[in-house]
Structure formats: C-alpha cells, structure tokens
Image 1 (cartoon, rainbow, N blue to C red):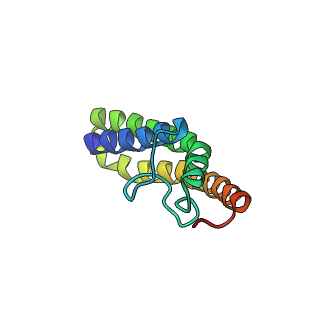
Image 2 (image 1 turned 90 degrees about the vertical axis):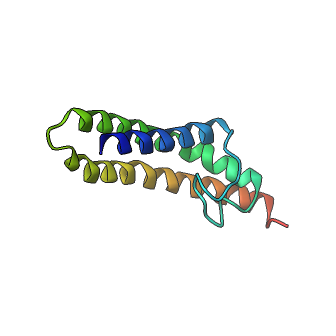
Length: 112
C-alpha cells in the first residue's frame, strides 16, 4: 500500500507542479480536463496555474501517507485516508482551475 501511495502521490504532485509552472500541455491523461479548461491553450494554462498548487500539495501529503504506511503495522488504513486527502486538495484545485479557465474563455470569446 505504501509504495502505491508514494507512486500516486508523486504523479499527482508532479502534475500540480508542472501545471503551476506552465509546463503541462493540453493532454488526455493528466490535469484538470474539462470542456472549459481544454477550450484553448490559454484556458488550460490559466486553469493549471490556478489549480496546480493545491494539486501539488495534495500529492505531497499522499507521499507522506505512503511513507507512514511503509512503517505501519496496518498499512491498509492509509488508502482511505489518502483518498480523502486527495479529494480535499483536488476539489478546491479543480474549482480554482475551472474559474480561471472560464474567465479566459469569456475574455477571449469562443474557441475556433
């Protein structure tokens, strides 16, 4: 369980950091993928700059939980805790991302 949490946390954190730095390009695998965020490169960039930090923090917390799970006598308890932590960080990040993308889309008009 610990190894899976560490791997998942690293992937989440890297996605958040790359998004925050503007290095995450539109794709169908990682990031906040909604119709609004994927409407344009500008919307995607704004969304991930806005929501990347909560996503990165969530990933770091999941990595920490994974490390605790490696040392725990009952590591299975950390899976549900990690799921709650991810939701606690990803949902607010997604809200920020959606709002930022919406502002860009309203400012720039519909994508062609």
